[in-house]
Image 1: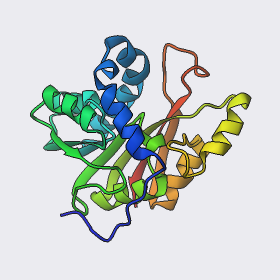
Image 2: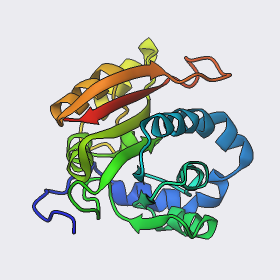
Image 3: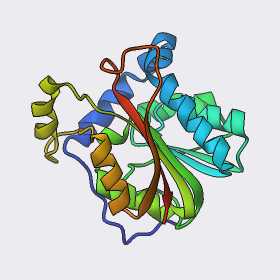
Length: 218
């Protein structure tokens, strides 16, 4: 059973955010949107999981379950969980696969036991989490040496800097941490960062400036 001692944290307006994603769940699955925005980081995550040989995996902020279902289909792990706070997204996900264990939950309070997993991954969702609280949960549910892989998008143009400073406040529903911030967040949560790299895309990096950060639980 999951620990009940962990304090649950959330950024402001998370209920509004999850409601919005529930309403747009069907549009989120369009082929063009998935291929252009979401497939490249998902390719990176699948490669990391394959290289690590992870057998018990959770995809946090799984949305409509495209990556989660792909993990189940391509890697054939012992168990894979898809976790999301949006009921609308999960309704789409459940219709996609009966192999995945779908869970309705926030990243800050995972419905999983201590040391239950070999790997935790998250793509295109980390900016909505309360980062320190979510990472403590990732650490809790992983075995020692377990893999964490997080793909984040961080606008880095000079014009984006005032917005980045503003969104650091918990009053805002999302903050996309810089690669340096992400590294420090993982290290503060007890992870050793083993790799951090830009995600290769057919689009210019300034247009979709995302990075994958990979670590191991200490």
